[in-house]
Length: 241
Picture (tube, rainbow, N blue to C red):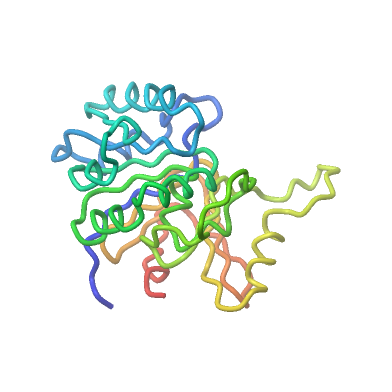
């Protein structure tokens, strides 16, 4: 397998119950970005109010010691990606986010910067979804229609952020998250799906992937029973698809 110069931090959720924006993962973000990165390019396309979203992200990253530029303020979004030191794509509606990435011609530009040039990529929720093969396993409503469900493909599998377990005390009769992922795997040639519960994240450094955080992840592979995995689990095998 060819070694890829990729550095990804794929976070399940931006806010954990009882904490502030990115508070539960801020130490992981600081360690991930290190001292080399001075400014982060933020992609706020997943929410409607991009100005407000950028203010929230800027406040958090400045508190961590990093400047933040929002791509929606750039005259040329592609050029902004080409000049970026690191990219952070925030959460919101995954369909809205992916459509905006396509509309602005950013899919190949981001792939090049992250896969070929090796700049750090942080995704949270929808930003994690679009880092994978496709957005087929998002939890969001298709409020807009992107030209394709294929995403950035920074990793060769899919992720389900905010993964929820069955509540045995609930009277809700709708499908569980596990049932929906099983339906996805009824289709041919569908990749594995990593269910990231709130509070965990996946760190990818080259061809090594490690589960971080405080909660377990649930892995779904077509034709196999789901498996549970503790933090610090090595998921490098998922990169060899």
